[in-house]
Length: 68
Image (cartoon, rainbow, N blue to C red; front, side, top):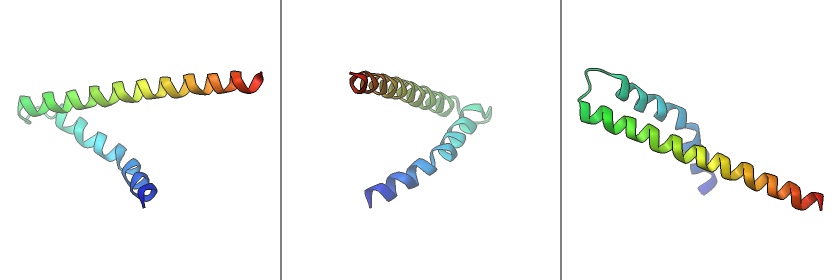
């Protein structure tokens, strides 16, 4: 069940990102909402970047261990 829910949410990431970006770019949206949307995009982009870097480093370490 947890795996199904995780897969469902992962499938919705692109849609959610588009919605947030639409809010951020909509000049008719209140400024505070646009700032909040921009902050959300930045926070998640930073998290994704950090996690991607961590995974890459772990994979490199695993490769080193397997080579020895």
